[in-house]
Image 1 (tube, helix red, strand yellow):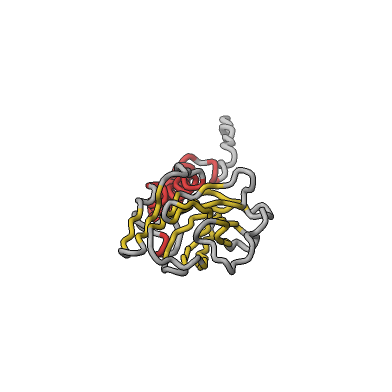
Image 2 (cartoon, rainbow, N blue to C red; image 1 turned 135 degrees about the horizontal axis):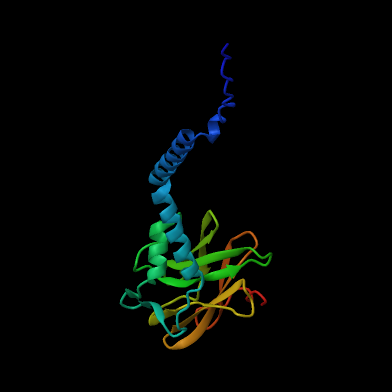
Length: 224
């Protein structure tokens, strides 16, 4: 009498996430999602990477104190402006930095460097001369940090200009005071200094310290 063969026990099938087909499909799906995200967000990521790179260059930017940035022949009404640095032009083109008055290769960019508020907030500070007359200079100060940017317009009263040649030189960061910077100038060859400070409220104060542009009625310069 024959006996029935023993029944084979094949065991339970592996869980779905252990099966090769499922794993391959999951990998293909993840790659497809990454490609879609990269296609959609790639230009934005690339622009932000470039903006951060140029911003670092701007924060470290220096130029000789003897470089003339802007000259104004009061009698003839003629002006001349040196070109803005390449890092600044590219930063404006690739970043969120706003303010038409601060852009362009021929803006009178009199100061560009990182400054720090008294409370320790680091900012890229860019100062551009945006207006001038025989009694007034007007500066736009642009600030940038992380995803924020601000533009401040700062009028500066000056001694009345009748005739002569006004020259503004490249602004310099103060190594002894991280919130402070200076802009040298001369009027008919007589030198003077313009001071600037980055304040805790992220505004920029600018005033004439000394020299022929200092009005006789102006208060004493801010103590350093």
